Image 1 (cartoon, rainbow, N blue to C red):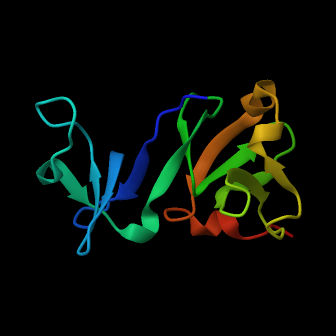
Image 2 (image 1 turned 90 degrees about the horizontal axis):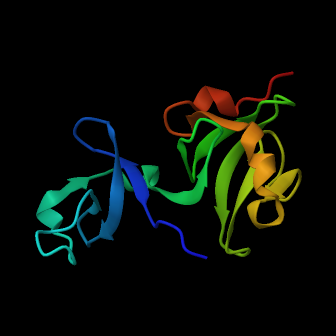
Length: 139
């Protein structure tokens, strides 16, 4: 299976999102948007210093509007209205959709077990960093 390995994070100085390659050093976490002139290596001078807690990886999937879905995104099922957080579960080595208000393994959907067609009803409504209010359970 081939997929793009892309990360995103919020730039420290201006709070904007950037996407690209992830580089961690002892002093900083960088997102580099493009390769160096040689087309092979990345130049950390072209990188953006991002807040480490905001870094998320692209899942390899897009929502119904063709927006890239990243770890930490909040998705809504267009048919049921249920909301999910995209989470990486280390023990499973997989991204899961965790229903908001449920335990990690309660009401989760393993992306590897779902048909492509089932993802057509999901769209991004926000993310855990910009929209924490979406994590509240409606009663």
